[in-house]
Image (cartoon, rainbow, N blue to C red; front, side):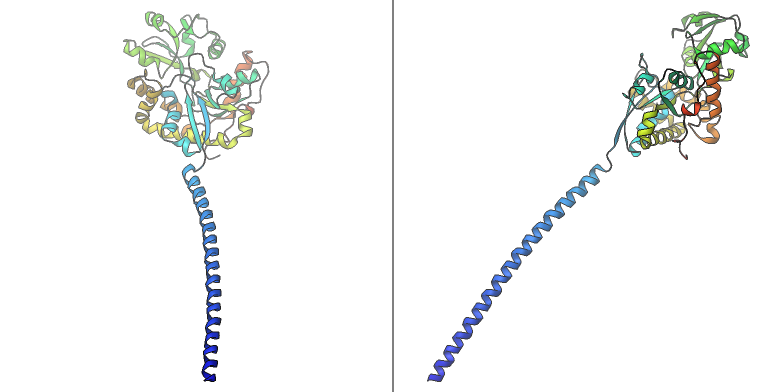
Length: 357
């Protein structure tokens, strides 16, 4: 009987021990689960943050750099490559959030770019050199037109084959135009000079008259009035400027060369696209200038092709410039006493940002 009682007590003792052990295990497991949950929760929060950050990176990609360029006149075909680059997203692909502001109406490309209000402008070789004479540190970064479309037009059938044949005629030209000052000196011209106002009425009425023009524009307008014309391209006189060249400031080149490179390369890509696809770009240009007709834009786009894609550009690509051409214009301006001293033209232009350089 005592043996049975002892066995019972022993059994109770064992049960008690097992119960305590089970309780300890349960508590330990509970704590482990809470720690695991807490750790999992912490990890989950970290993963969420990482996912949010990743999503932000994917959504925002690289932040685009805001850039503004100013054309040299109201939107037209002669600026078509810039609009093509914008339309096709070439600027955005290069990391630029581009705004194109149309010039014209007294807006000064030189002053707005020099003051930093816009980043890039369009101009010509002589304009850059004359600006540097005034202490404005502009630098050309791409020569879009290998030859300027500026020309002296005359009525078709007139006995004019070269610049010497302008002698004795009425010539409508902008006052003090450097190219005409050069022509008068170079060809010893004696003409009746009248101020060009943009109105071709007087020229139309005088069959022996000569007028400044853009050979990509005025001939089209006059043909609609029944007037046929020929012209002498200014560059053929020896006054060879790069037209519609792209420029910026020395400061922009020094402080943001990667932006300048992105801008130039995307612009050149736009001009390469425009060569074969100008018809697609015409409606986009008209968004900026609704008054420009499709026929006018088509005429200009075709007429300017040799000036943009010919000459040195045929071998070296759109935008190409040479020191020899810059030196020639600088010396002409110096000889005409339009600049007080000769300049180092290598400071006035650079080809370092053109594709392939």
